[in-house]
Length: 298
Image 1: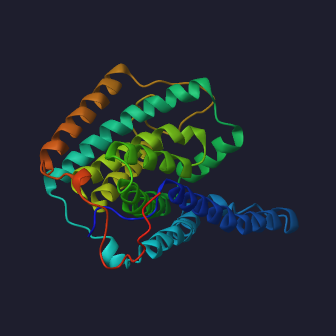
Image 2: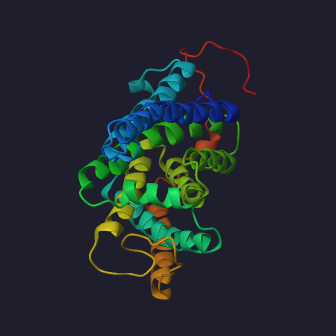
Image 3: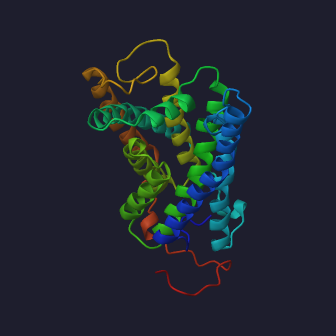
């Protein structure tokens, strides 16, 4: 498997993200119409289909799957030839988990700070609570957050967009641009910071290993931790339970320090667990026989 791709470039990546967002909107509109018809026409409680994790999971499979297929077509690659999944070692997986755990704790506090300055509107608060924090939807939430989102988003962003940008930019620039597009997919400003920072960490995982599977694992762990924090019975202010967006609650200092220690320890251990001779920046752009377009990247 080539660790770089000829396409997409940055603007090609922008178009793929816009396509994913457009498809999400197009698929959500009929669901909203059904909700209105049930509530206004049939005078029954709205099923709120556009907020059901299981339905959103299938919507995302289509909405993000189409740009993935388009990206493969642009590179004239089959799925099997484009995405190899070398198995990470147990030490690498443990290091990924440690890094992501620390990052999630730090990002939780960063979100608390952000919400203290800019509170989300009421409709967004309700939508987030219905989607992520409603009881009785654990299995469908796991399907959406731990399976569908990590697989589809990592194939698109680290599997295609990052690899396309690596043929045009230095690794650090490619990682930053990919993370910017990754954050843009999440649309609302209250998810932007966390998605952007997590995107940088996931891009670093790929740059160290060349494995999209490692990125999928890291993304799945991050989402699973978010879900777990909403389900556990013990109370850690600002971290666990259903968030109350009407008040600002910060995490205890010991939690923030623990998160920082875990994050640094995870980065160090992952660096130790990966190949020090892996130099993606030195690899030439893809030139295999499957690409016949001789036009230089722009």
